[in-house]
Image (cartoon, rainbow, N blue to C red):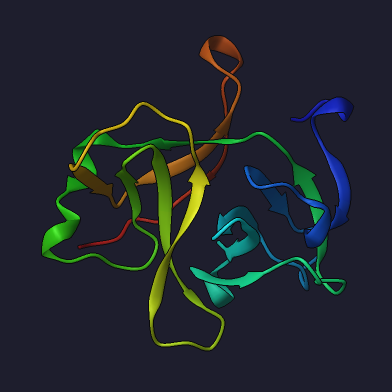
Length: 153
């Protein structure tokens, strides 16, 4: 459950990077808000358009329950080296960021959408994960808001 101070309702364009947006109806989608080159982007998590993204700056047609300041938690048992191949929906830790691999709406090529930045640097190394979840809170107050479906590399 969410307390009233933990969410708002609005358009995708109003959500800051680091937000999870949950649908209010069957016609809305679950998305994570990240950024591409400092522009906010919505990454679809719902099955219909899973791991596609679009820039949200001028998006007046998408709405939902906005939960800001969420974090990504990875399953260390699902780690792999993305230098040898990667896939849509994988979470990647590189430099000072956590990113998700997603493809632009109606595109064949994929990109990395930054979900968290300002982490301790891992230098030239990188790691990716197939199992991950969106959380808020810590310790006893930690809540899982969304989990990535099981996938294979």
